[in-house]
Image 1 (cartoon, rainbow over the protein chains, first blue to last red):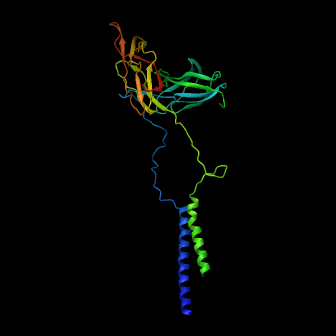
Image 2: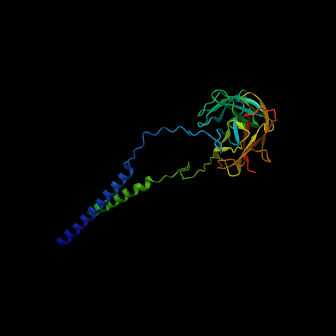
Image 3: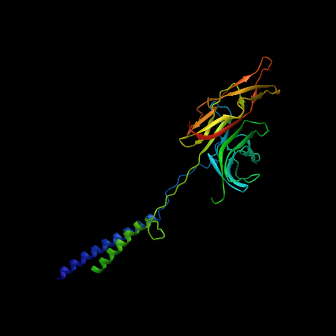
Length: 168
Length: 151
């Protein structure tokens, strides 16, 4: 009887030890998965320069020097009754010329920017007069110049302008 | 002993469930039931067409693009505004006239989605007589870029 009891106790102890080991293993697994140590990092090349865009100047298929003209979406939305509007007008950083941008709506100039250097942009413009709601044909005219003022080819980028009342 | 074993089993089960609960990311609605929301965003077209700095009549130009992220059904059309009435001058301000030769639709450049080079080229024809001084004549013009439906 005593021997049987001792045997049973030994079995219980073994079971308890196994359960404790499993419990310890589960706790360790949870801790490791939440606090994983960072892997060994690779050393970047400190002699590399900061990326500030494509340094290759634009060119045509035969290597003729060119001017990169940024397009617009098929239609843009302005808010009726206000002069400040959002539009992306930029001079790609790879260009070697200045842009003099202006905005025309139904053939009438409504905004004139200043000389825009490569890598610079307008994101908000102030129209000469606010527009009424409706649909218009519009274009951004890019007049292009070298630094010495000599004129280059120009470009117009056409799009549909939808002027909406605010909150509509 | 048996009670201790039972307790350990319960604790072990509870600990084993923790990683599964922490990975659950159910979204609850105001009614307390998980739900889904559909989000829609339209990425706008973006493109950059490269035009020549100046026109040289002796060359055939193929415009290029540094970016042409438009839809499959769209195209970028390039036309020359004063294609019939170009004025080129030399260093002494002598002038000749020229016309741009466009395709049947009046285009001098055409891009489809992903194109890096225009599908059509642009040439020009100069008009001068025997008295016109020899030498290089250069002019500038305005190119009109528009996004439209592919024809």
